[in-house]
Length: 600
Image (cartoon, rainbow, N blue to C red):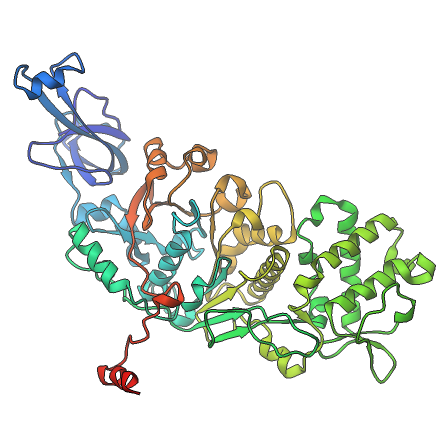
């Protein structure tokens, strides 16, 4: 019952635990008090502190005498509750002596605000006692809020693993169909939501469509250790199966002009499609700014980039195919004559490589007119700024040359153009871990910009979830870049367009504030204790910040608008393979078929 020796307030109170009963951290409880007029008020809350101590003793050393039976004393077993809901909203304190009970059934739904969520509830994981924590899909799909942010130490916090579990839950729980039917009767189905994942670490995400050969064993162990009535997938109402309708995209391997285009991956030999941008697309779709991740640090350089971007866009209008045709370049006058220069039937120079494009820009900005450059291109910019522009392009040339090519046929350009939206895939994995830092920034920036422009034209139907780790690299707090501007647009306007960012980072304190603060759902895994004290984590009560430093893999703290305090959950082992040796090659096959393979 509620203690009278500690302050009882409408938001925090202590209660004593009866002999023989047990209370642990994160238990949900309910207590009812009566107003003077006889009206009941129910308090629902979360246990955030539990303690035992001796009563009736003065010195710490008295414990030895108590255990020996020399001194009489009783043990006080008490717990502190953070109130998550008051119904009705009469914020009076509970009365000392009021009975406190575990929240079960209807009381549990009230404590977790599941009654408010209704058809929008979908499972986010399991509580310590095996009950489901619901998440409100309306705070994810942009209807009432949007975006998810996940923080934690790399490798221990399992940020990407939990992001994938949330996608699995959204796609397979049926919540999209339920919300769509309630709103306007339109079936969402698998076409009602898509996801794009940028794989930045190893090739772990290239097997999401393959079953995991360890999941049954891991879930059996977890069921026994936690005393659950069934495996966690069954308790959550989700299938223990990998992702469906997945496409895998990877950059091509570097090669000479005209070389075959093959994906740069090592562990998966089939089912991976290389992606390439044509040189004309690079100019026409104004991709040049995404080559420069730090252009905002120099006003003059930013002006040059904007000018060249406009010039290249105009040139692309006169070209067809993958190459870029220019009529005002005499390669013989350049300081360095590019290899494999080609001319079309009208005598125009046909640019087929990213290096040739840089040589052309160097000619227009520096070499033409005896070192003065073309006045229409230079626009009175200092030679130092122009040379800095060319130097930076040369610095990324080897990284972008395989990605930007002008030697493709129309059929190849169409085949290898990355298509993240209009295809029949629900999940697109873009593997960029083999790319250098500048190339990763370029690919992510261009693809997100294209996605944003597509959704601006086509509206918010078919929600697109974008999973991006390492936000501290793509949207740092102190620097500016084109990709950061795109991420800010997604964070601030994306939910109205149906673009939902599931972002992750090791340190939220180093990520642009507006990106983190716009996330309706905040998730925290294992944190460095110094990081946990930063202002970005003030949504966690002090007791939860201390616990964040000892969280184990598979355990997360989830904060959502419907519940004022974070809730600790655990989630199941991935049913999809996360590396090649986890792939279950025999899943879904008949015993006779497997045996025939062994006999061959």
